[in-house]
Amino acid sequence: MAERTQKQKQTPERADQVVEHAAPAVNESGEKLRAELDDLLDEIDEVLETNAEDFVKSYVQKGGQ
Amino acid sequence: MAIPKVCGIETEYGIVVRGGDNNPVSASSLLINAYVNATSRKIGWDFEDETPANDARGFNLDDIFPPEIETSLVNAVLPNGARYYVDHAHPEISTPEVTTAAEAVRWDRAADEIVRASMRYAAEVLKNGAELIVYKNNSDGKGNSYGCHENYLVNRETPFGRIVSHITPHFVTRQIFCGAGKVGCEQTGRQPGDVAYQLSQRADFFEEEVGLETTLKRPIVNTRDEPHCDPQKYRRLHVIVGDANMSEVATYLKIGTTSIVLAMIEDDQFSDEFLLGSPVPAIRQVSHDPSLQRAILLRDGRRATALEIQWGLLEKARKYEQTHGLMAVGEAVGADVLSRWEQVLSGLESDPDSVADWVDWVAKRRLVDGYRQRHGLAHDAAELKAIDLQYHDMRVDRCLALRVGLDTIVEPADAQWAMTNPPTTTRAYFRGRCLDKFPNEIVAANWDSLVFDIGSDPLKRVPMMEPLRGTAEHVANLIDESATASELLDRLGAQHP
Image 1 (tube, rainbow over the protein chains, first blue to last red):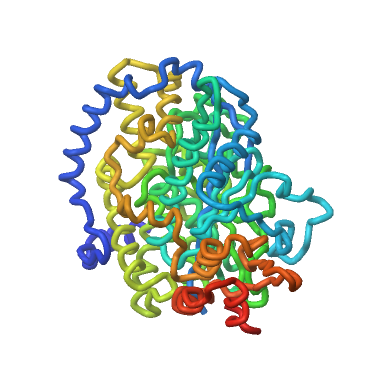
Image 2 (image 1 turned 90 degrees about the vertical axis):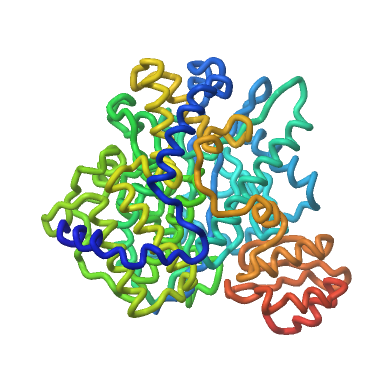
């Protein structure tokens, strides 16, 4: 398994052949995501349910499939 | 031989009413009725061909199981070819049948928008400030789970045992990119705090390797043999092991990779290299390990991580593309799935946070960890469980998944269009177009037939036993040129659509 993993990583020859949708530049988007996370954490309390404990306790569902 | 991977997604949503009657059955009925009454004439579902107790292993459990679906509950067919109904105290949408992962994501997004519209219509019906809220998740955090099922058309000639053997390693390990993430643990016999955070909403609830159950002792491979099409030629693999995804790319990869692996199984591409020693413990082990480092036991005694097994499956899929092509899953979409499959595995291997815009469990974990660190909270703090639930809140102004920067595939206008239009590539086209054009003449519909009432004659059932007939190519002109349902039936003649 380890050998297979190694081989796979060395030969990503088709990684650039994205057909329908542009692939994100993973590293650049990582930076962007970090900044967005900080912004979101700044404002999240305005979005979160006001009483987390009550909200979590009252979220009860019947089992389904 | 691999056949086209016609597929679809069924999602059971969580539902809550605040400040009013919180009975989930009546709330689900209200939600769906509000949508159906506001948008179309209600067409009933026809249960003639439902056989959920048939087992793929060759026996029938009708005498053991009560009827799975209560016929008195709301059950509507939509003009986009989907089914919208109450199932086990949850609102559920089954997307129309589609032919590619790209189409599946589009109609899954349409289902999301149908739910959001339903909440708005329900708000007009509810009184005294009551609010009805829907969640696209799979667990209440208290041991109750509800499903997001996938369905795939497979060749009846493929032995079922071969499907079970070779799809199981994928089902156990694909959660590293399509798990929706969960705070805590709900596995029977363990404490909620035993696991701070795990990859999957559903893994804790799987107790068997193979079986017919869907609500108790859930099996990794479900054996329900109810093809909703020609049973001599096809099976419908009913997959109950997955999470509902908020990330479009995660849904795309879940459907896309599974379709490819199933085509490879039909073409007998697998030997025993990925078979697992103990799939049930393994599915929890993988889910409970966000480090992705713990190896699981293979049947031959080796150990491999979920990532290594996924790399192995991808490598085989690449070879399969070269030797057989990807016609069964759509050539262009299949090639794109392989490319993204590689990207997501590379990202997970080097730094999972780098795929936070694709993978739900990563996106949710960053939010949970960021909040916990900022406020110095314990791992089992109520606030973190609240974030977990609210990641899946379908209200646009409350949904956290909509705020974490997830990459999208479907244009908003395309999702809107798919709320009222069927896919053009399957029999869902015939179903949807007929429902839209002749709502007063159709008295019942289900996956494999439509029943017309055109007045004086007896009711006429039009069977649709071939999922790839009744497409736009086959019947668009016929429907366009028929002014009445009677004319359409005459033109169809003795032929099936």
